[in-house]
Length: 21
Figure 1 (cartoon, rainbow, N blue to C red):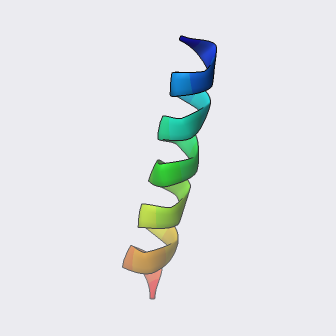
Figure 2: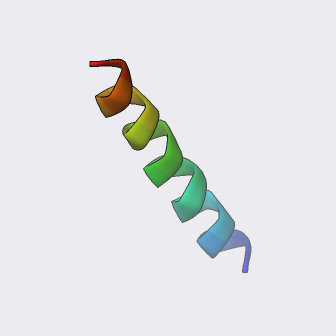
């Protein structure tokens, strides 16, 4: 489950980066 959490964090950071433009 820790791996899943890490994956979610990575995707979240990418989403924020794209949203930030």
